[in-house]
Amino acid sequence: MCVENAETEKIWDCKVHFSFSGVVRGVQVLALGEKTMAEELVLRCALAKGFLYNPAAANALVERYEGVENLYWNSRDKGLEPFKDVLDSSFSESSLRWAEEEVAWCARKGVKLLFHGEKGYPRLLGECNDAPHMLYYKGNAGLNNPRCISMVGTRLASRYGKECCSRIVEHLAEYSPLIVSGLAYGIDIAVHKAALSAGLETVAVLPNGIDSIYPSGHRDIAAQMVHQGGILTEFPRGEAPRRLNFIKRNRIIAAMARAVIVVESRVKGGSMITAELAGGYGREIFAVPGRMTDANSFGCNYLIAKNVAAAYNCASAVPSALGWNAGEGSDVALQPQLFSFEVEKKEKLLLSLKFDTPMDVERVCAATGFDWGEASMLLLELELEGKVQVTDNMEYCLRK
View (cartoon, rainbow, N blue to C red):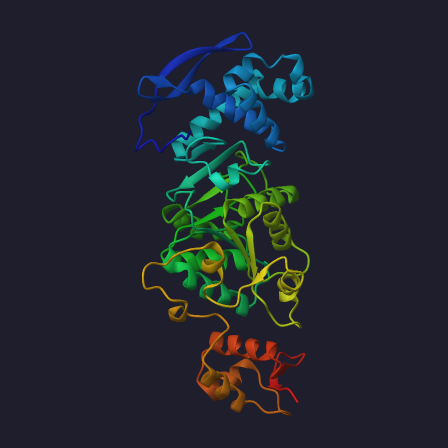
């Protein structure tokens, strides 16, 4: 169920009266043909807020009572005693008044309310036992794209990490996936920008209410995403981005997608938590390998070493693992690879290096004519092959 934009649906155009806790009040409702859904919208919105940090219970209770209205009228059942306080709070007059205002605000702003188990709700997320009871969504992308990929990484993204974001998105573009991330600084925003540039739909999952953008500096990008993807959250208006909310946000990022790609991450951080959650949900996990001296790659290299994640080392990594078919005549050999470059280019780069005089990437570019991103990828592959070594100053020379 969702509340659609006022420009596309006739909403709030009639009034009904119904009773909550013995108090009869006028409630504006969404009219869909002959059937109104005011009570269910208000009740489910109120229930979602009450069980915000225990959504599994809300989902189970609605299913057990075959609807939120039955749950409301039977909320005093003996079997519901463990949830008595939360249910009383959720279905109190003040809570229901708040829910009415919340539903009305969403309708005015074109924000859809997506409920667990109903059409439009992300199916993969809904299969998880801790799926949100309700989601706020503003955008035009379908959230059930069968080729949905999440990409995450450190807020302290390096130039290499940002370049990898662009290359990975370019590799995936022919499959028209939905790209999901968290709108944070660093890798997240690089992912969203790369998706927008490639013409792909991209969705940001927020750790706060949908009435504000966090971080605020990414407001313009979020505005673009509303027209080429969307923004999504389980948190009601006014909810601040508290520490726990980031973990709750990360579980949505992990659960929505078929696969999660960690681009850059330190050993500890939100990206590693997302990867752990993805593993628990049975999702495919990929990590972009990096230099063993680069702290931003410690987490990725660890995930690969422990067989938690597959190394994202070529363009076909994700499509092959997920069984995607790019179409008749598609061939892996025609797809650009992230690390496997032509032998001639590697030989040209090796000839530009010396044993005793380390060179930084810019000098390598000047000597070979390669751009920064290509030279960095070649140097990384040669380092992994044991042919090149890197100094503490991030300069390169031939390995003796």
